[in-house]
Length: 160
Image (cartoon, rainbow, N blue to C red; front, side, top):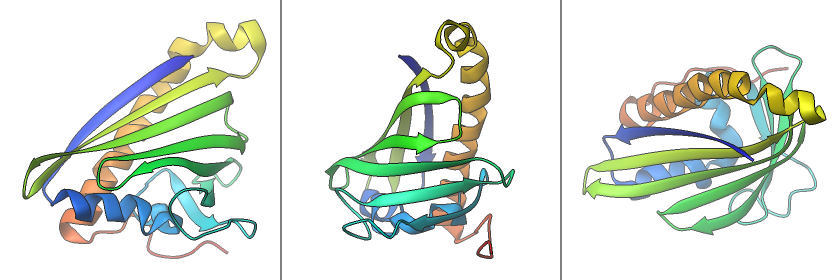
């Protein structure tokens, strides 16, 4: 599997940062500049936490992914299985770690492990895919920090 890892220090307490990712699971589009919209799937057993299912529709209007929360540790970890979608990976696991630096600062470490589609050709493209994914994941963390620290949303309206 290929791996991409990004990091961001957020000026907020760890429980607030974790809550923005887990408790408001359906609304990641508010701070993810790569998304047009996100929502909880009808078949999801819950709105957040272990087992919650979400669809994220990309900004380009063509691509999408479906994610399932497969592991949680309150205020410490959120692990997502990206189990279906149009992006060029066969499997992908996103691990978001939350580390308290101080009572008012949290480090967020986002690691994406993925296996590309397209067999051997996909393996050849891994370096290019990593170059594409890394800035997108970093912009997600930057958007998360802006949202948590100032309430700034990158996407103000819900897509039709």
